Length: 109
Length: 115
Image 1 (spheres, each protein chain N blue to C red):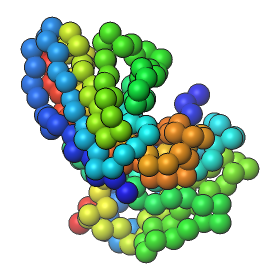
Image 2: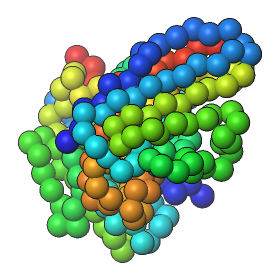
Image 3: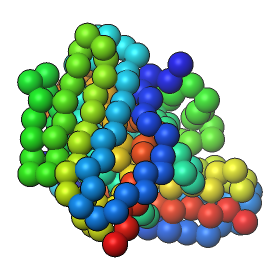
């Protein structure tokens, strides 16, 4: 079993749609959680951290369920510019960071 | 935060040759990380570069193939040695300015094609 598993992609959605990505992690001792965004031919960049209480940044909402070892990212009112690969990232302590395989999102006009 | 300058951004190399990738960070960092990202795949950690000691390699990666230097707290190099077409990939360096609950910063990546 992979340490971090994500929904298989790609997701193809129209502009304005709401799309949700899911991620599970295997190490119950994992300490911190993130969603990164990677544009085509670019390096990954932090989209948002994920907190147990859930957090929202504009159209993006991230949630963490430690009991189920599950992380989610919700994107509302999708824009063309949201098209990218979204990486679920888990830190298991210290400098040990594990990246999920990523989920590709295509937002169509 | 940290700003990382990585070069070259891309290269096309003959099989059997070696390529050295450089990363320069704008601040001192304890750990630097080297990742490989093959087409359509996520990031795989190659090794952790420690200043003043040998790099720590992940399973499947060895020092003879991927020698790493870390001469100071702001700079590291990764060499891809005796290249074959299977080494064609994107190589990324990364830093985390503190352990645990912090953002990882990446260089712009080096797109390597081996012919």
